[in-house]
Amino acid sequence: MDKIVNKIVGLGVPGLVLLVAMAVSGWVGAAAITSALAMLGGPFGMLGGIAVLGILSMISQGIAEYGFEALLEETISGLKAQGKTNAQIEKEISYYPISRELKLKIREYLKS
Image (cartoon, rainbow, N blue to C red; front, side, top):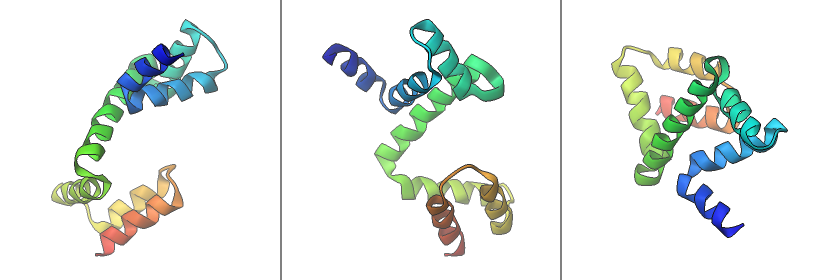
């Protein structure tokens, strides 16, 4: 089991996400990988799932290097630079399936 855990740890957060997605799929072996990637990819299927894991890898590295707060601030600044208002950003986040606490944290930052 140590060898398997070390391989998953080597993949980082995306490996953990893939492990959970495979467990939730109810399948084993190659079918579990296929269905997990398809589930993560949504309408874009397995290729979308691979892309999601790649993006997740970049985000988790960014959080580890700079911290959540810094990434949040810079992302919101980037959205404002694209011309979005605080009201537009707040309206968009209200539709996302994220925790209430995270929505409140984003709203607090928008007000400051």
